[in-house]
Image 1 (cartoon, rainbow, N blue to C red):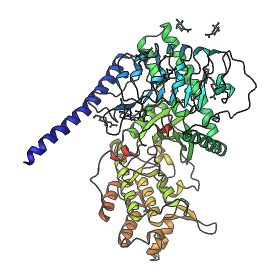
Image 2 (image 1 turned 135 degrees about the vertical axis):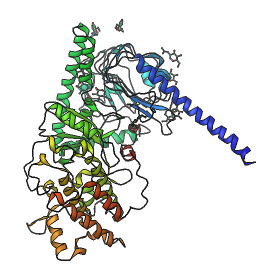
Image 3 (image 1 turned 90 degrees about the vertical axis):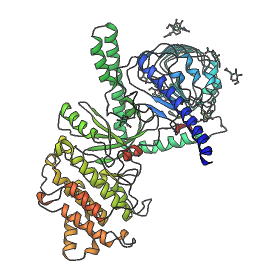
Image 4 (image 1 turned 180 degrees about the vertical axis):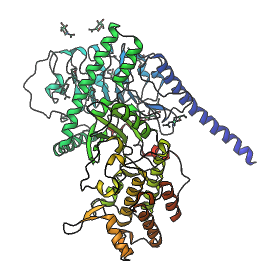
Length: 626
Ligand SMILES: *[C@@H]1O[C@H](CO)[C@@H](O)[C@H](O)[C@H]1NC(C)=O
Ligand SMILES: *[C@@H]1O[C@H](CO)[C@@H](O)[C@H](O)[C@H]1NC(C)=O
Ligand SMILES: *[C@@H]1O[C@H](CO)[C@@H](O)[C@H](O)[C@H]1NC(C)=O
Ligand SMILES: *[C@@H]1O[C@H](CO)[C@@H](O)[C@H](O)[C@H]1NC(C)=O
Ligand SMILES: *[C@@H]1O[C@H](CO)[C@@H](O)[C@H](O)[C@H]1NC(C)=O
Ligand SMILES: *[C@@H]1O[C@H](CO)[C@@H](O)[C@H](O)[C@H]1NC(C)=O
Ligand SMILES: *[C@@H]1O[C@H](CO)[C@@H](O)[C@H](O)[C@H]1NC(C)=O
Ligand SMILES: *[C@@H]1O[C@H](CO)[C@@H](O)[C@H](O)[C@H]1NC(C)=O
Ligand SMILES: *[C@@H]1O[C@H](CO)[C@@H](O)[C@H](O)[C@H]1NC(C)=O
Ligand SMILES: *[C@@H]1O[C@H](CO)[C@@H](O)[C@H](O)[C@H]1NC(C)=O
């Protein structure tokens, strides 16, 4: 009886699955044909054997992983025209970015099959010919960037039908004719500069600043001054959510920009890099055209020019240095080795960028060290995604953790939106961080050193276990003078030169982090007066006087039955911070000791890789729409 019921439903499930796989299989085939037919200089990790979704560089799938919805391949070094009937078969595609490549030919006719396309980035290519007359079939187009190409002809009137269009950039092409009266209420950003437009500025577009129309044969009337970046939308739109969101963002932007001077430096860098990169690229393509170099050489050099950010294998991000430097950036803080910024890319991917100061080694040594760091994939080690090395600038790119560091969680302003860290979480932080450091210590034949363990370099992974960051830098940086800084509170007494940090000194620093978790106190802090207190010495003195209970963070007092565990953890911490390096336990032993105290509740099987995967920001979505 039962079997009779089950069988058809299995069949049904099977059929549904087949359908899903068929669509995804079709998408995969289309993508493979696309890269096979279009020469490119940077290799892509698109292997037949690996899953398309969340594995192939630049490819994003929908939630149930049945269709490809975004393809982002900036700066891959594509040369030639887009092969017909390849990308156009990705019928569920919503985001397409092929910018900063060398794509030639006309606007692909068959893109009209991409009915759901909402974001189109084709800037910085060599596309030519007219813009398609049929633009209006893409009702959903929200951002269109075709700037810095060689399109000619006029703007087709079908643009008038793009009611959702929020940003249109056609700058630096050879477009001509009159500018149509684009009365699009949701249009927030426009740039038509450096074309060959004639006539006058239509009424509906006078709300934009003159710079938008510069470099054309258009006379400027003296128009009322408007905001230089975002034009206020004069036409109240029915769904003005978009408009309000943007102007709020603009106000915020101004406040942030005004208050954070560091940003100015960053923006300056952006400009320097963009212009440098462009001129380099031009140089290469000029060489290529003259045929002055063997093709192979050109390929490797263009690769160098395009792909100056070095990504690690398996990284699913797709952006180039230009994107990164153009991204909106926010200072996160000043670390031991330089400033850290939060960068939000055009597609809403959020990453942390560290600018290293005072790197003390040459390019080869730096790269070697980065290769080791980047090869460590562990759920308790923050993954290094990419790095960049030039004479003047050294950058590292990490995942962004929105909750902030353990230091912020412990020592952030009380009262504000800081939630007290419960004991369970503190245990998980300790276990996770210990496992991460133990993993790091197995690298380089068991000699690799983290070198900068402190609570501001520990984050929570998706399972809320500790996860360590900023490893392997101390040996390649100039030695730091030992000031009375936060970092000094973590430094083992034997470490006089930061480059000579060793595994036992990592154990010491970890012990200080444990004490921080137990006491809720910073490693170096002042009491009421000017007296500077070293956490390790303070704990020693309190414990020696048998006031053990006084040591613990008052915030922990509310949790019942944890006293014993706290005392055991205190003992482990104390064994890590003993004075003689050779008397400290090995990190692998520390892991066992902490696991012996207790397996934190609901701990799953150590699931490899999961942590770093879900700690990546949510799929860079169509965020701009809402
Ligand atoms: C387009 O998107 C909508 C929802 O966003 C979806 O229902 C529809 O199936 C998509 N079309 C295609 C061809 O994938
Ligand atoms: C446009 O997007 C909406 C959801 O955002 C979707 O429902 C609709 O199918 C899309 N339109 C087209 C023509 O695909
Ligand atoms: C315009 O779109 C229609 C269908 O929407 C199609 O039949 C026609 O070929 C397209 N024209 C051009 C020039 O792409
Ligand atoms: C656009 O450029 C092509 C050559 O690239 C030329 O044949 C065509 O006439 C131009 N069209 C316009 C409208 O200038
Ligand atoms: C705009 O869309 C309407 C209906 O969808 C169509 O009749 C009209 O021809 C389109 N206008 C242009 C300029 O494409
Ligand atoms: C389009 O690309 C240009 C050049 O890369 C960039 O400056 C501009 O911000 C982009 N505009 C939009 C709306 O994405
Ligand atoms: C157009 O090109 C000029 C010079 O190459 C550049 O300065 C400008 O930023 C470009 N405009 C846009 C919108 O990309
Ligand atoms: C711009 O248009 C004028 C005629 O209107 C033409 O003489 C000139 O060659 C065009 N310039 C470019 C760069 O296309
Ligand atoms: C438009 O692009 C030009 C350079 O091509 C730039 O100078 C101008 O500031 C841009 N305008 C806006 C509003 O982005
Ligand atoms: C991609 O797939 C390959 C082979 O299946 C695997 O080795 C690799 O770890 C995967 N990368 C990611 C980011 O999932």
